[in-house]
Length: 222
Image (cartoon, rainbow, N blue to C red; front, side):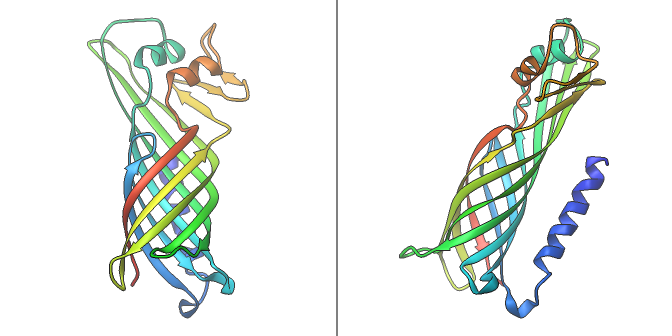
């Protein structure tokens, strides 16, 4: 299924999950964060708190990071040829969807302190263009992963809080696609260039793998 079709479907599923319980049983909040996650990142999430009469919350989020896609010369060698003509230009981005369970902790002076963990779905895209040459190609990867972290909020008033988050995401299995070629972390390849395998592709491209994140922003409670 094309990723542009899959993304709105996953977002719709997340909205249904947040709306699954009666409104009176939920304490809803919305958070917007910015910071670093392999590059500059922005993230928006919705949280349903106090589920099942426990200090347990469900958080669903979507984010986009602007990243360095990798080494342009090595990417061309691994996915196309050994040509060196043209001046390389590159750009990259990662969409990520996340679902976390958050266990609340009591810390004096802060609200909504908690440790979280959950699943991740990452959609990486890196474009390599060679001005003056004849190559212009995009490398992509979609991957499932897991993540953990801690977050905390400092109340400003009854509706707004300053919020910070520190996390680590891991994507253990990957397949890189580009120019009718693919390399997988399990050693499989399709139309791979002679002499190159997953190790060379992984070294050339900066797809998500082990990603620390540090974000700050604001939380709003309606």
